[in-house]
Each structure stands twice: as structure tokens, then as C-alpha cells.
Amino acid sequence: MIDSFAHHPVEIAADIEAARGVAGDDGRVIAVYQPRGYARTLAYAVPVAAELAAADLVVLLDIHAPAWEPNPGVSAQLIADAGAGQVASPGDAVGLVSEAGRPGDVVLVMGSGPLAEQVATALGVVLQAACG
Image 1 (tube, rainbow, N blue to C red):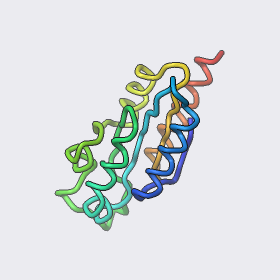
Image 2: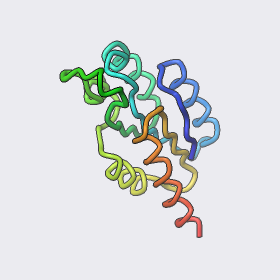
Image 3: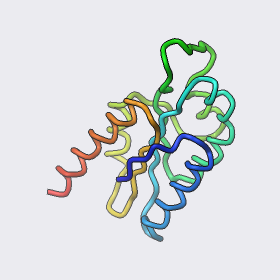
């Protein structure tokens, strides 16, 4: 598992490319992404979705944004609607990744918010338990 601060399309592309190199020919890249900020999500939904689409499985978390920046029409669903992944709660994300993952896969958790951190921590516990 790789835990990354990536939240810009260029950073996302670089992280997925690096994860693909680690996964090799037999592994898959499973990306969990928490968008950062409503304005940024609105502006970058399409390019972020295009870069995330390079992963084999994408799970999207709710936006990490300050409480003073609400925008009722903006959510992680914009990225899903642009062609990348499905939106899930942190608990559902852990379940989806745990069920889909197999030996050789690389799980890439990207974002700067607390939900991404929760998922990375929970997946770390699941992976440690699975490895004995």
C-alpha cells in the first residue's frame, strides 16, 4: 500500500504510473482518492477522472474541504460522473478494496484529508492481518 498526498492531476498520474511499475505485469493498481476542496474538485473533475481511469479500480471518498467553503452542487460524484470510479464511505472503501485486492496488487491511497488517512490506516491493519 502506498499513502500519498497527491490531489492534482499531474501528481495523480505520476503516482499511478509509479504504482503500475511496482505492480508489474501481474498486479493491478487500486486507487482510493479523496478530492481536496470544492473549487478544486469543480475545476479539475474531468482531468482528475482521466488520470484516475489509468487505475484498475477507483474508489472515491468525500471531498476534504474547510467548513467555510461549502458548495452544495459539488461532490466527489463529479469525478465518478466524469468516468472514474465510485463514491464510497471510508468503511465501504476499505471493504471494496479488501474484497477486490489480490496478491501482487498495489493499493494507492491519495489525498490530503482525514478520510484518506482513515482508509490508509484501516487498510494497513487489514493487510497486516492478511499477511499473518
